[in-house]
Structure formats: structure tokens, C-alpha cells
Image 1 (spheres, helix red, strand yellow):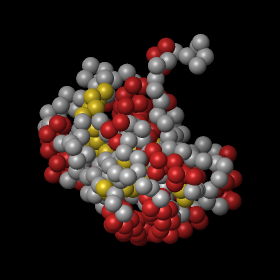
Image 2 (cartoon, protein in one colour):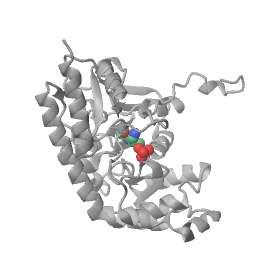
Image 3 (cartoon, protein in one colour):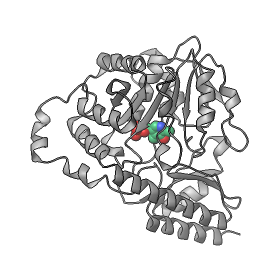
Image 4 (cartoon, helix red, strand yellow):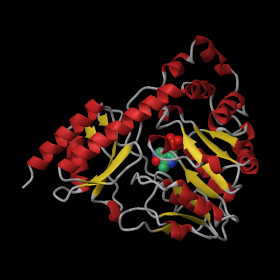
Length: 355
Ligand code: PMP
């Protein structure tokens, strides 16, 4: 830290991203990326002509992409906001809708960035404990005063809230914004974006990183009533108007056009998830019923940390969190069937070697 850093950031505990090793190739099941490439139309969307256009700034309004998203999700273009990854949107949502007097409520075990964004904007954070089975207790979120942020499905558990549960939260929090982070919704949960017309306090955040195989392109979007979207736009024009680069815009437009491709890949991933969960249970693991593209699992004969380390030595990366409440667990991204067979084989071997 230099002696020049603004003192308000000196104690900031930053987010630790999952490992992105550049030195060797792993079977990479640690950061919930898709094992499949983006749609062929995405690959075709960028040619020599598009690369030459890089001399020009991108469209600050992302008009074409917003129009396509609006059509795909049944909302108006002014109800769509797009940004450089959904992290960027979540950040702006904390900045725009977090009130320093009331703060932000979110599940105590959830996406690690929520606490970081709260700290960054000096918003009091209210982490709400999960139930013993790791599910969210909706009762805890009724009639709050804070900005509410909930991942549905939650991460790293993969557990979902029903639409009825989300609606209860929306109904009883008319004076505060409710952000539903649907990063993993396409793998089996039910999106609450149909509530947008009814609840002006709802902001739904989604991403191209998981179901549309575009984590490296950095593209996220939010759906919500026009006034909320204008608030996010206001922050964008105050920080980085050309927030999405030209190549990502083109890739995003092409991805949205090819609904069949992404639906098929989501189906395949959900099928591989169920297969992997069954096989892990046969090996003695406790596996939460996930609706995301990952599983959250633990085994009484091997610690989460040891399984992570030993698999890494065998060329397989999974995610381990050192948070005490979940340190027995690992989060395993669903890869291709062949990758999961390798993971299961190595895991079974490790378990067999233990006393
Ligand atoms: N929300 C959740 C719950 C996530 O797990 C992630 C990915 N780490 C994100 C948002 C951010 O995704 P991205 O910035 O790639 O859109």
C-alpha cells in the first residue's frame, strides 16, 4: 500500500477471485465457466472488418444489444441495462441503491462480492444466516429497511427460491430495492423477470458468463423498471460511458440471437449435474440439490481443503472456501461428461486410499 491511498480504502478487504492458472492446463471446475464454447454465431460475429472498427468507440447506449435483450426477455429496451460483466452491475446497484443509514442485507453465505461492495461504499452490511440446511429463510427478508441482494440460485450452495418466495420479499419491501442476482438461473431455476412490470423495486441481474459461455467477454445485464435502469445509466455516464467494448457487444448480440444453442447447452449441463450428483452420493458425499452449473458437496472422510489440494495435484481444479461454516465443502463446476468422469475417478481413488 502506498502512503497516498485514500484512508477510506486502507482497510478494504478485496474480493479474491477463483484461481485462473496461466501456467498449465487443468480440468477447470473452479469458477463456474461453461465447458462449451460460445455459439458458432458468436465466433462468426467477429471478423477482420469488425477488428478494423476497433479504432472507433463503442455505442455508449448499446442500442442493438439492448433491443435484442428486451425482445428476448419480454421487456422494453429502456428496462434493460448492460455492463462489463454482472459484477459491474452489482457494484453500481450497491452504489446507487445502498443507503449508508440503512445498509445492505444479503445471505451470510453467498457471493463474496456482496460484502466487498458494501464495504467499498461504506454501507453497513447485514449478513443474514442461512438455515441449517443452507436454505434461505424468506421470513428473514420480509419488511426490511435495507437494500436486499439475493443470489437465486444462491452461490455456492446452488439452492433456489421459488417465485412465490421472491414475490413475498418484493411485496413487503416496497420502500427498498431488491436485487435478485440470477447469474445461474438458466440451469434450472425460475427467473423472476416477469415481476418487473409489477414491482418497481425489483432489479434482476443476469450474465452472459455462465449459460452463454462468455465469461471472458465480460457481459452482464439487468432488467428492471425504467427509473431504476436510468439510475444505473446515470452512474455509467459518470464513470465509463463506453462501458462495453465493440467486440463484446457484437458477441452478445450474436449470442442472444442463438437461443437454441444456449438452451441445449444448459440442458446438457443440468443433465451432467444430476449424473455427477448421483455418482458423488454413491461415493458417500453429501450433495446439496443444486439448480446451478455447480455442486456443493462434502464427505466425512476427507476435508474440503484436502480434496481440493489432492485433486489439484492431479490436474483438477475445484473451489474450496476457507469460511468456517462451509470449510468442509467444495464447490464443483459442472464440466463436460468426460471431465466429470475424470473428476469422479480421481475422487474415488483418493477416497479409496484413505484409512
Ligand atoms: N453473481 C454471482 C452469484 C456469481 O457467482 C458471479 C460469478 N462469479 C457473478 C455474479 C459475476 O459474474 P460476471 O461478472 O462474470 O457476470
